[in-house]
Amino acid sequence: MGKIAIGFDIGGTNLRAALIREEGHILERRSVLSEADKGIEFVVKNLARLIQQTIKGGGIAGVGIGIPGIIDSSKGILTQAPNICNVNNYPLRDMLIEKIGQSVPVFIENDANCAAIGEWWIGAGKDAKSLIILTLGTGVGGGIILDGVLWNGADGMAGEIGHITIYPDGAKCNCGNFGCLESYASAVAIRRMVDHGLERNVETIIREKITNRSKERIPEIVAEAAIEGDKFALWVWEEVGKALGIAIADLVNLLNVEMVIIGGGLANAWELFIDRAKKEAKKRGLRAPIKRAKIVKGVLGDDAGILGAGYLVFKEKGII
Image 1 (cartoon, rainbow, N blue to C red):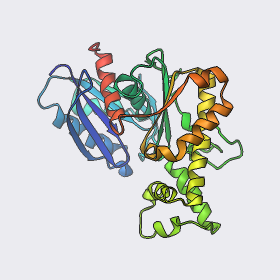
Image 2 (image 1 turned 60 degrees about the horizontal axis):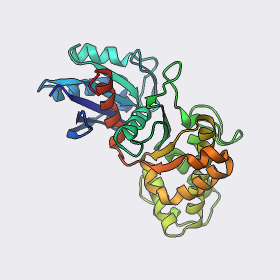
Image 3 (image 1 turned 45 degrees about the horizontal axis):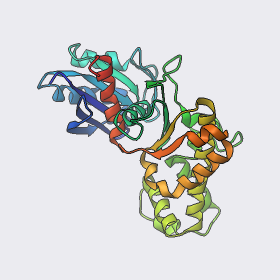
Image 4 (image 1 turned 180 degrees about the horizontal axis):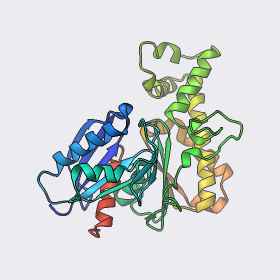
């Protein structure tokens, strides 16, 4: 049992955990509500309880945690977290250890970085030495692997790809900037485009489809409408693809990576945006690096982050 890690993925709604073997096989899964809307203290309480329940059998090498936000991974500090209340330089690792004890080491990393590690370890990028992952969900996360090593940057905060500027005078982003990738290639972006279109009374079947359905399902509804041939819905996905293509070209020009992996919930609409993304990337990228770079869909789905979190433990403990 000494070569088993616990990988965690902390979301705005749920805490998902898995027992993971050193070869990447998931043995067991668990999940509880995160209560992130109530504040970081509730998240830590629920996380500690789930860890304690999971390590009862003993023999756990450590706990790896992927969490959305700005992380100082070396100090275990959660600097900012968009989906968790009351976070400002919160000492997450220390507060966890205070609750669970020091017998099990805890490693903390940004969730998109964990997804990049997972896909590089046993996913779509397992044969690549360098890659970038873009996770398209509520926002846009990013992770960078260079020469087989996660690139954290000078302050452990590298990979915030969602906040590179695509359109200098574009839509305002939640970060305060204008024209970020996240403002054009995320669930939040799609909801903004739909709201704006409906306000302008565009002709679309989306108006009827969203009646009595949650706003959280709007990206799924726009995908349904696009598949049915709705012109406005198709335009929305074209905009997503265009913004992605611009970002991909910039990233490949800068880092000359072998692969760009696209994951997250919006990747389920792959066929609706990928052709435009590849076309835009090819148009804007330098000929040799953009031709070399493979643009692929992630294969691990929601497990990418959990597996990457588990890998952190194995790597830090010298198991792999």
